[in-house]
Image (cartoon, rainbow, N blue to C red; front, side, top):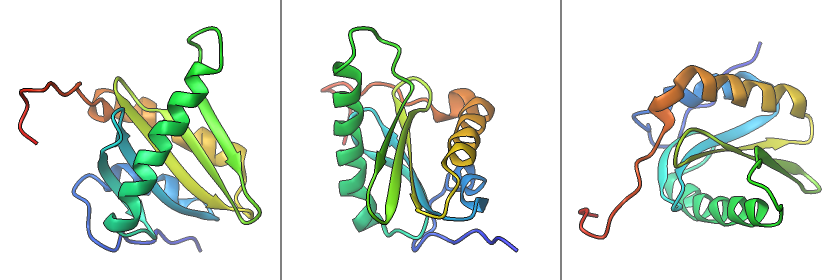
Length: 135
């Protein structure tokens, strides 16, 4: 039986990501604004751990977009000895980021991520911030 691992600190919108974490081998999921701010998280990660990963994921997403000559970027997959990172566009101005161990079936994880993005639609969008916006 697969169980969803709770966040170390409940994230108000973490329920949106819980469906991804039902896949065996997934560790945690982050929803990130395009400027690198953590919007919500779920799984085995604390907010203090999630915030620098959110910033790094945004940088990786930007690099991925800029190494292609067209604007058709969809996702980036990075493999390490013990884990994988998947970064996917998640609506206007948002990024969905999932970490999974080597036992996870990546095609299933990526498909579930796409389903979550489609299902949540505009709820995942993050409006651009302006200099006059309060922090």
